[in-house]
Image (cartoon, rainbow, N blue to C red):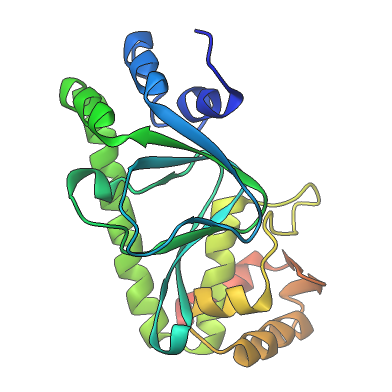
Length: 233
């Protein structure tokens, strides 16, 4: 099948794509009803309160999903990797976006038109089950994170956040440096703490030889110890 651009091909045919098992006809239908955009680092994919237009696939790059709390402080809810989907919950409601998303590096997105995708889902039970599984897994992750961020101490919260980043983005070629670069402020917002606490806790973990820090890059040297700290809370 010939696609109109590389982004839709990545979203429909990529190794991590939820759509890989679809028939060519259904893929063509989805491809014919999509738009794509390039998003610069720091730009919004959408803002909380905006009207949802369809399912978003992050064709390339990385993004963060967050809500603004008291005083405009962010709480990062989720980090999104390449071929990750955003807004599958909104497919089944008429609600506006209940959170915001920004690119943390230059990215590209495809937006699948909502009604077209719903029609494909209605005809394809296997794809519908995949979406149900995805929503269920994300609900479980969200529930676990809520408990962790409200009950763990700062050291346990930072450890868990680094492990989530490891599991989401993997490592660079050295097998230690996380495959994502975040500001200390973003790490704090992902861990539900102040930036000063995040900086101090990261420095302590580095002093203990559990992680290494090189500017904004963070490497995990001792995975078992980091996992132990996260479990202890």
